[in-house]
Amino acid sequence: MDEFASNRVAPPPLPHDLLLEILLRLPPEPIYLFRASLVSKHWRGLVHDAGFLRRFRDFHGGTPPVLGFFNNQPWSPLFIPTACSAAASAAAKMSHKEVWVWDCRHGLALLQNHRHSSPLFVWDLVTGDRRYLPMPPATTGVGFWNGALLHTAGHGGDCPSSPFLVLYLCSLDSNGYCTYAYVYSSETGIWTETASIAMPSYSTGIAVKRTALVENTLHWILDNSFIFEFDLDKHRLGLTARIPDGMLRSYGWDVVIMATEDGLLGFAGVDGFDLHLWSMVKSIDGVVTWTRRSTIDLKKLLAPEVVATCTVGLKPIGFAQEPRVKIIGFAEEPRVIFIYVRSSIYMLHLKSMQIEEVSEKGTYGSIYPYASFYTPGTIHGGDDQAEVSNNSSDAFAVTAANIRRWLKRVMQYFTVVFLFSCMT
Image (cartoon, rainbow, N blue to C red; front, top):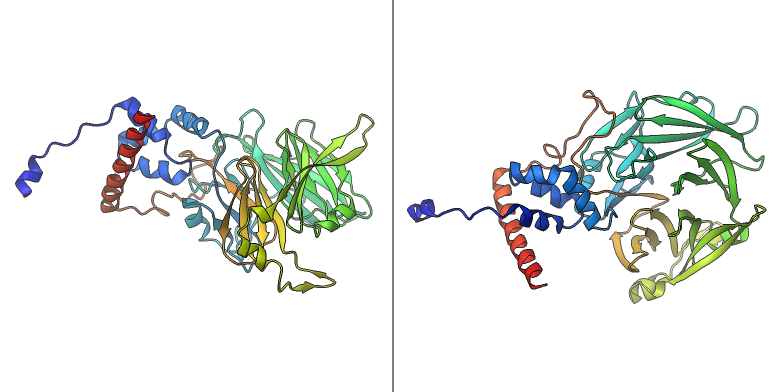
């Protein structure tokens, strides 16, 4: 038997073009390309090629998959995965006692580490790379602050290794609230104060919720229902509009601002089982109105038993009742809404109208979805001394035996894909 096995001829390698086509058809979650890169040096070279990665993203519509979401509620996990990825393994090593999440965008996350000399850091969960940032100049006497993360204009946001910007907003209460904006560039490595604005006297600060990026303007919602904006081109702060109190009250004050599909500012809220999507319309003379774009009946999407459990046993909170269904997050690029349904979280894909449960029972506030393709590079501007958690050695301690077993499964999968493509 051993002699027979030793005399067997290894199958010839797949043609280069055929192998590329097969790799392109792997699912978009980073774990699949990562495992493919472990097969051989040749495969690693193909998977790490910048041209192939662009083709891979284009093949999957340029929309990165949602890998999970961060949650700042201390009695729930910090990161809840929605797909098999290294992100869950890397984030599981951190707790709410250590970090607070401020934003996620373009395959990166902005967090604050309470136990580090440089508290702010930008994290690529797929590669494990971190870039620590110095704190902005104005950090004393701050009443409220929030942060946002995005790629530098012109880089398209298709790769986490592109240059990035961090926007830091802080409200100082020395002489009435005045909000200042500081911008950090990964290319220069410094903070720059760019703008300031006096806040309305009835404002109590910036709500701790995720920002909305509409074209080249970032938007925050204030805790008094005003929407705050920062123009990234002109470096100008301003108050955009206000969501009427009556409208907010019908949604239990739980709304998420977002970009509409056609590039306008909008928001979403749930009234009963109706998910309402709104967009802002501004007239020539600057008058702002809100138009309801669509209504989605969640009862038609959720399982009947889930709907039934939402109608009994509601817990009173003050003079109101705990919302049965509420919106808690929105992922911009894949256009996915996160809905809290009686202690569980569901993802609603707006393009396909498919809904799926992604977490078991827990308590969740405003969440920060994380979406990314596979990226083998490092965060732009990082130095060799930056703290790096390499997934290939940390999150994936893969043995040779595991690789051989996985390779067998991969080749079986490739064979099925190839035969299917020939038939079609």
